[in-house]
Every structure is written in C-alpha cells, then in structure tokens.
Image 1: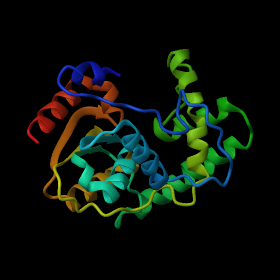
Image 2: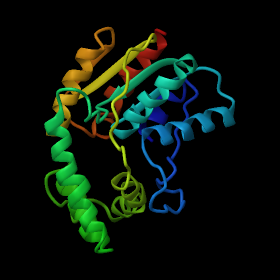
Image 3: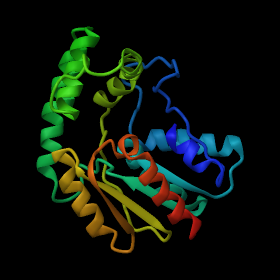
Image 4: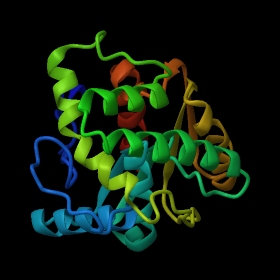
Length: 231
C-alpha cells in the first residue's frame, strides 16, 4: 500500500489479491492446478477484464515468478517488466536451493498443515522464511492476515510444479531488484538471473532483506518511478 501513495499521483496504479490471498475467500480443493502459469492466466483475465492495453508489470518474490510467466506469453502487452528476487529455484546451477526448499518448506510445512494447527503451520513458515518463529513479535492484525493467506501456501505445497524455470530473453525494458540480506536460497537464483539478463537494469538494495518493498518503500518507489518514466 505505501507504493500506491508514492506512485498514484504520477501513474495509474493497480494492485490485486491473487486467487487464494486475503481478502479473497476462494476455497482450495486439493488437486486443483496451481503454479505460476495458472496465476499468470488469472492476471491475464484481470487485465482483459479492466481493459488495459499496455502496462508496466511489477512482481516481488513468487509474484515475480508469476510476472515472468506472464511475460513469457504476453510480452507484447508489456511496456516494461520489474521483478525482485523471483524464486527461480529450477534455474540451472541452483539445484541445492531447490533441494533445501523442498526439504524445509514443501515437506516440513506440508507436515504441519496435516495437524490442522495454524499456529504450528505459521511457526514452520516463519522458521523457513525468517529463521525463527516471530508470531509473538508482530501485530495481531498482521498475523491474522498472514493466516488468511495460508490457503495460498497450501495450494503451493500441493503444486506439481511450484517453481518452474522460464525463458528470460525479453525484448523489453527489464529491471531487477536484489537485497543485501536476502534469504540464502535466493542468492544463487539472484546471481544467475542477473547473469542471464545482461541488458536488464540491476538495482541492489543495501541493508535490506527480501522484504525490501515493505522496509524500503520510498527507495523502491523512487527507483520504479525513475525507471518507468524513461520508457
């Protein structure tokens, strides 16, 4: 939300909640296809529904993977593509990152879901993403919102292909963000993604974690505004 305030006076800014994210209340049925490609199709329907012609697409983390999936099919719709630390764990050279994610996220959090104990599920998720259980350290409202997003995590854990590799040879302006204190599993994918996209504008956010959009909203919005104003 801080980025809406930073950018709305210059651009028409649209954000949306994905199919299984708060405040949506779409029930997930086990076996329902879920991956960046299905999410990109939802984005395609949204864009068609609101009648946008060409636009700048920004995606963070798994949203960045979805943005890349969309760009693979609809590059002609994009003025530019901006991604920050998409988990391209299947990218060549990052097999260890994928192994760790399967072991510590897919398997461990998946086992926690089977207990139907949301507190235990959140504990497992925080331990993977943050390194420790921080449920008692964040506002109740924020924790409740995260719990409301658990259905999205459940869909991810049941996906047959949650982290596919994609072509990243795009004939459009691209900007890539990375953070100094990102998650260890993303360091490899960051490095190789940047190497695979030599023509992209690369911005490294110092003294920031993977949650750079939340912790450095003004810096991030300034970079975005400057980049897309030049396109």
